[in-house]
Image (spheres, rainbow, N blue to C red):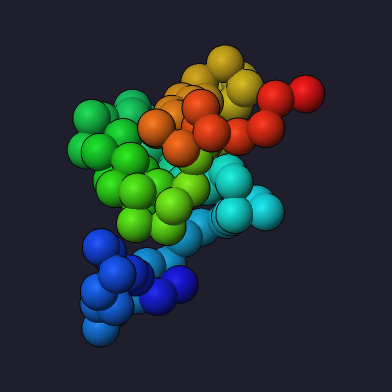
Amino acid sequence: MPITYKEIKIDSYIKADIMVNNTILLELKTVEEIHPIYKAQLLSYMKLLNCPKGIIINFLTEKITESAVHLVNELFSELPKK
């Protein structure tokens, strides 16, 4: 995905693991523990891609749903409510 920041197109690309409807960014990991750097990386990707929600999914765990890390940014509050 191309990167645009403050209306400036940066000559680089982000390789997002999975993006769903430009709303949810999934970061897939296979690690023993989720380090803070992974959260910071996902928050940066979310900001650059104008994505309101991100989820880190770690496959090196017994229960993926319990170990998933959900992150939101300021764009999340702008989503339509059901």
